[in-house]
Image (cartoon, rainbow, N blue to C red; front, top):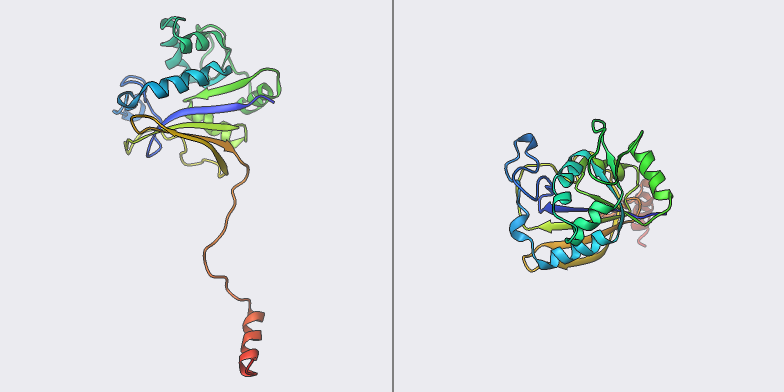
Length: 222
């Protein structure tokens, strides 16, 4: 079974929209594009390079695909990230795109969750999802995400698209790695750990039978 990994950049209040530049995604009147850039350091660059080198396929939403396709083919294969992204197979979830110009790209046919499940069951190595917030929600809903790699920035925006928005499926995660960049950005790697557990700190209330037993014991002087 191929592992499916979601990697994304998040503000402290969970916003993932347009981290890399002002024009990346202005939908909803978003005016904070490029919030990530001042915090990026050498550690983050090396970790991202190592991660992407491990990809054997990408699963992307339409918006993220268009952002990547407008950038990475023009960077040049001397850059290790560009070389990998340009070469690897890209599976794109879109109802509107039909002709994809970026090399090794194909639109996912039919139901996305079913198609991704088949990809995971097929031959090959790690599948990676970058950005693609709406797609990630679908994958989480169907239990298809094995690992979350989250860069959490010390930034509050108060507006914008959030990774874990209304409708996120309740689930339990296992923290398997954490590190901090020189600029204070925290990397957290979580693995899916099944259904959420619940508990309570409230004092346990005695049953009516127990109340009656205590009353009789008190009357008997026990």
